[in-house]
Length: 251
Image (cartoon, rainbow, N blue to C red; front, side, top):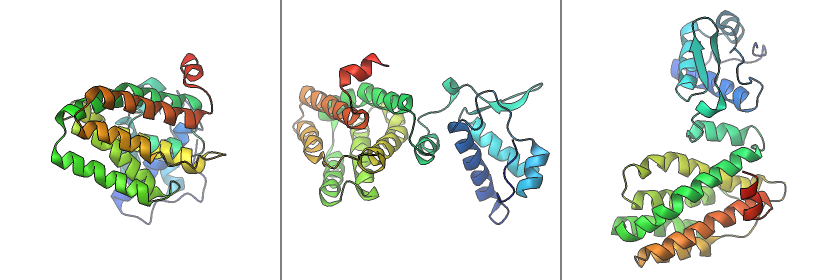
Protein backbone atom coordinates (compact mmCIF):
# COMPACT_ATOMS: atom_id res chain seq x y z
CA UNK A 1 0.00 0.00 0.00
CA UNK A 2 1.43 3.37 -1.06
CA UNK A 3 0.64 6.57 0.88
CA UNK A 4 -1.35 9.19 -1.02
CA UNK A 5 0.66 11.81 -2.87
CA UNK A 6 -0.23 14.72 -0.51
CA UNK A 7 1.38 12.89 2.41
CA UNK A 8 4.62 14.66 3.27
CA UNK A 9 7.08 14.38 6.14
CA UNK A 10 10.00 16.27 4.59
CA UNK A 11 9.67 19.64 6.34
CA UNK A 12 10.43 18.43 9.86
CA UNK A 13 13.47 17.31 11.81
CA UNK A 14 14.69 13.75 11.29
CA UNK A 15 13.39 12.61 14.66
CA UNK A 16 9.96 14.15 14.10
CA UNK A 17 9.77 12.63 10.63
CA UNK A 18 10.36 9.18 12.13
CA UNK A 19 7.58 9.78 14.60
CA UNK A 20 5.19 11.09 11.95
CA UNK A 21 5.69 8.03 9.76
CA UNK A 22 5.21 5.74 12.76
CA UNK A 23 2.03 7.65 13.64
CA UNK A 24 0.68 7.26 10.12
CA UNK A 25 1.47 3.55 9.97
CA UNK A 26 0.18 2.94 13.51
CA UNK A 27 -3.18 4.43 12.59
CA UNK A 28 -3.30 2.36 9.41
CA UNK A 29 -2.79 -0.76 11.52
CA UNK A 30 -5.31 -0.09 14.29
CA UNK A 31 -8.00 0.83 11.74
CA UNK A 32 -7.36 -2.35 9.77
CA UNK A 33 -6.31 -0.55 6.61
CA UNK A 34 -3.12 -2.52 7.13
CA UNK A 35 -4.48 -5.84 8.37
CA UNK A 36 -2.67 -8.54 10.29
CA UNK A 37 -0.30 -10.28 7.88
CA UNK A 38 -0.22 -7.40 5.39
CA UNK A 39 3.12 -6.15 4.18
CA UNK A 40 4.05 -2.56 4.99
CA UNK A 41 4.47 -0.16 2.03
CA UNK A 42 7.54 -1.00 -0.03
CA UNK A 43 10.51 1.04 1.05
CA UNK A 44 11.55 2.56 -2.27
CA UNK A 45 8.00 3.45 -3.30
CA UNK A 46 7.09 4.92 0.08
CA UNK A 47 10.24 7.01 0.29
CA UNK A 48 9.79 8.34 -3.24
CA UNK A 49 6.14 9.24 -2.65
CA UNK A 50 6.55 10.70 0.85
CA UNK A 51 9.89 12.40 0.24
CA UNK A 52 11.78 10.75 3.09
CA UNK A 53 15.02 8.84 3.34
CA UNK A 54 15.26 5.07 3.54
CA UNK A 55 16.93 5.33 6.95
CA UNK A 56 14.08 7.44 8.27
CA UNK A 57 11.49 4.96 7.06
CA UNK A 58 13.38 2.02 8.56
CA UNK A 59 13.62 3.79 11.92
CA UNK A 60 9.84 4.31 11.90
CA UNK A 61 9.37 0.60 11.22
CA UNK A 62 11.69 -0.27 14.11
CA UNK A 63 9.63 2.02 16.34
CA UNK A 64 6.46 0.08 15.55
CA UNK A 65 8.24 -3.26 15.82
CA UNK A 66 9.20 -2.25 19.34
CA UNK A 67 5.48 -1.94 20.12
CA UNK A 68 4.91 -5.45 18.80
CA UNK A 69 2.91 -4.23 15.79
CA UNK A 70 5.33 -5.30 13.05
CA UNK A 71 7.42 -8.40 12.53
CA UNK A 72 10.26 -8.86 10.03
CA UNK A 73 11.30 -12.13 8.46
CA UNK A 74 13.87 -12.87 5.81
CA UNK A 75 11.58 -14.27 3.12
CA UNK A 76 8.35 -12.40 3.79
CA UNK A 77 9.66 -8.97 4.75
CA UNK A 78 8.06 -6.66 7.30
CA UNK A 79 4.39 -7.35 7.98
CA UNK A 80 1.72 -6.46 10.51
CA UNK A 81 2.08 -8.76 13.51
CA UNK A 82 -0.72 -10.72 15.15
CA UNK A 83 -2.73 -8.53 17.52
CA UNK A 84 -1.82 -10.76 20.47
CA UNK A 85 1.71 -9.40 20.26
CA UNK A 86 0.82 -5.70 20.22
CA UNK A 87 1.70 -3.60 23.25
CA UNK A 88 -1.92 -2.59 23.80
CA UNK A 89 -1.09 -0.61 26.95
CA UNK A 90 1.52 1.46 25.14
CA UNK A 91 0.31 5.09 25.40
CA UNK A 92 0.79 5.62 21.65
CA UNK A 93 -1.17 2.51 20.72
CA UNK A 94 -3.97 3.50 23.11
CA UNK A 95 -4.09 6.97 21.63
CA UNK A 96 -4.28 5.67 18.07
CA UNK A 97 -7.25 3.47 18.92
CA UNK A 98 -9.16 6.42 20.35
CA UNK A 99 -8.06 9.04 17.83
CA UNK A 100 -9.02 7.21 14.65
CA UNK A 101 -12.69 6.86 15.61
CA UNK A 102 -14.84 4.89 18.01
CA UNK A 103 -12.64 2.13 19.47
CA UNK A 104 -13.85 -1.45 18.97
CA UNK A 105 -15.95 -2.87 21.80
CA UNK A 106 -13.46 -5.65 22.48
CA UNK A 107 -10.75 -3.06 23.18
CA UNK A 108 -12.82 -1.00 25.60
CA UNK A 109 -13.98 -4.14 27.43
CA UNK A 110 -10.42 -5.43 27.66
CA UNK A 111 -9.17 -2.16 29.16
CA UNK A 112 -11.84 -2.17 31.85
CA UNK A 113 -11.27 -5.85 32.56
CA UNK A 114 -7.58 -5.10 33.14
CA UNK A 115 -8.41 -2.13 35.36
CA UNK A 116 -10.81 -4.27 37.39
CA UNK A 117 -8.03 -6.77 38.03
CA UNK A 118 -5.29 -4.23 38.83
CA UNK A 119 -6.78 -1.15 40.48
CA UNK A 120 -8.84 -2.57 43.40
CA UNK A 121 -5.92 -4.57 44.87
CA UNK A 122 -3.69 -1.52 44.33
CA UNK A 123 -6.17 0.59 46.30
CA UNK A 124 -5.95 -1.91 49.16
CA UNK A 125 -2.15 -1.71 49.15
CA UNK A 126 -2.33 2.08 48.94
CA UNK A 127 -4.49 2.14 52.08
CA UNK A 128 -1.77 0.23 53.91
CA UNK A 129 1.27 2.04 52.48
CA UNK A 130 0.29 5.56 51.40
CA UNK A 131 2.53 8.43 52.43
CA UNK A 132 1.80 12.09 53.09
CA UNK A 133 3.11 12.84 49.59
CA UNK A 134 0.64 10.33 48.13
CA UNK A 135 -2.22 11.97 50.02
CA UNK A 136 -1.25 15.38 48.62
CA UNK A 137 -1.31 13.94 45.09
CA UNK A 138 -4.78 12.49 45.68
CA UNK A 139 -6.07 15.81 47.01
CA UNK A 140 -4.67 17.72 44.03
CA UNK A 141 -6.38 15.36 41.58
CA UNK A 142 -9.69 15.55 43.44
CA UNK A 143 -9.53 19.34 43.58
CA UNK A 144 -9.02 19.52 39.82
CA UNK A 145 -11.91 17.09 39.24
CA UNK A 146 -14.19 19.29 41.39
CA UNK A 147 -13.27 22.49 39.57
CA UNK A 148 -13.21 21.32 35.94
CA UNK A 149 -16.03 20.26 33.64
CA UNK A 150 -16.15 16.56 32.76
CA UNK A 151 -15.90 17.41 29.05
CA UNK A 152 -12.55 19.18 29.48
CA UNK A 153 -9.17 17.56 28.89
CA UNK A 154 -8.05 18.98 32.24
CA UNK A 155 -10.73 16.87 34.00
CA UNK A 156 -9.74 13.75 32.07
CA UNK A 157 -6.10 14.28 33.04
CA UNK A 158 -7.03 14.88 36.69
CA UNK A 159 -9.02 11.65 36.70
CA UNK A 160 -6.06 9.84 35.15
CA UNK A 161 -3.75 11.36 37.81
CA UNK A 162 -5.99 10.03 40.58
CA UNK A 163 -5.83 6.48 39.21
CA UNK A 164 -2.11 6.81 38.56
CA UNK A 165 -1.63 7.82 42.18
CA UNK A 166 -3.46 4.69 43.31
CA UNK A 167 -0.79 2.62 41.58
CA UNK A 168 2.06 4.75 42.88
CA UNK A 169 0.71 4.68 46.43
CA UNK A 170 0.80 0.86 46.35
CA UNK A 171 4.60 1.22 46.51
CA UNK A 172 4.87 -2.07 44.65
CA UNK A 173 7.59 -1.62 42.00
CA UNK A 174 6.09 -4.24 39.69
CA UNK A 175 2.56 -2.81 39.80
CA UNK A 176 3.95 0.67 39.19
CA UNK A 177 5.19 -0.53 35.80
CA UNK A 178 1.53 -0.42 34.72
CA UNK A 179 1.44 3.28 35.57
CA UNK A 180 1.81 4.80 32.10
CA UNK A 181 -0.58 2.34 30.51
CA UNK A 182 -3.28 2.67 33.19
CA UNK A 183 -3.01 6.47 33.13
CA UNK A 184 -3.41 6.53 29.35
CA UNK A 185 -6.27 4.01 29.48
CA UNK A 186 -8.13 6.09 32.07
CA UNK A 187 -7.58 9.35 30.19
CA UNK A 188 -8.80 8.05 26.84
CA UNK A 189 -11.72 5.98 28.13
CA UNK A 190 -12.80 8.92 30.29
CA UNK A 191 -12.73 11.30 27.34
CA UNK A 192 -14.72 8.75 25.37
CA UNK A 193 -17.39 8.41 28.11
CA UNK A 194 -17.85 12.10 28.81
CA UNK A 195 -17.25 13.70 25.44
CA UNK A 196 -16.93 11.39 22.45
CA UNK A 197 -19.74 8.84 22.88
CA UNK A 198 -22.90 9.45 20.79
CA UNK A 199 -24.67 10.19 24.10
CA UNK A 200 -21.93 11.30 26.50
CA UNK A 201 -22.44 11.03 30.25
CA UNK A 202 -22.63 14.28 32.20
CA UNK A 203 -22.47 13.13 35.83
CA UNK A 204 -19.22 13.98 37.61
CA UNK A 205 -18.21 10.86 39.57
CA UNK A 206 -16.17 12.91 42.02
CA UNK A 207 -17.91 11.55 45.11
CA UNK A 208 -17.06 7.95 44.16
CA UNK A 209 -13.41 8.97 43.79
CA UNK A 210 -13.51 10.89 47.07
CA UNK A 211 -14.93 7.83 48.83
CA UNK A 212 -12.00 5.71 47.62
CA UNK A 213 -9.59 8.38 48.83
CA UNK A 214 -11.24 8.53 52.25
CA UNK A 215 -10.75 4.79 52.71
CA UNK A 216 -7.12 5.06 51.59
CA UNK A 217 -6.52 7.97 53.93
CA UNK A 218 -8.18 6.03 56.77
CA UNK A 219 -5.92 3.02 56.12
CA UNK A 220 -8.90 0.80 55.36
CA UNK A 221 -7.70 -1.68 52.70
CA UNK A 222 -10.94 -3.67 52.59
CA UNK A 223 -13.07 -0.58 52.07
CA UNK A 224 -10.64 0.92 49.55
CA UNK A 225 -10.60 -2.26 47.46
CA UNK A 226 -14.39 -2.60 47.51
CA UNK A 227 -15.06 1.02 46.54
CA UNK A 228 -12.42 0.98 43.80
CA UNK A 229 -14.00 -2.16 42.33
CA UNK A 230 -17.38 -0.43 42.34
CA UNK A 231 -15.86 2.66 40.73
CA UNK A 232 -14.35 0.68 37.84
CA UNK A 233 -17.57 -1.31 37.36
CA UNK A 234 -19.58 1.92 37.20
CA UNK A 235 -17.23 3.34 34.59
CA UNK A 236 -17.63 0.13 32.59
CA UNK A 237 -21.41 0.49 32.70
CA UNK A 238 -21.20 4.12 31.61
CA UNK A 239 -19.17 3.09 28.58
CA UNK A 240 -21.22 0.06 27.58
CA UNK A 241 -24.84 0.90 28.26
CA UNK A 242 -25.41 -2.60 29.57
CA UNK A 243 -25.03 -4.45 32.85
CA UNK A 244 -21.75 -5.63 34.29
CA UNK A 245 -23.03 -9.22 34.30
CA UNK A 246 -24.09 -9.03 30.65
CA UNK A 247 -20.78 -7.52 29.62
CA UNK A 248 -18.73 -10.10 31.48
CA UNK A 249 -20.72 -12.90 29.86
CA UNK A 250 -19.73 -11.51 26.47
CA UNK A 251 -16.01 -11.47 27.23
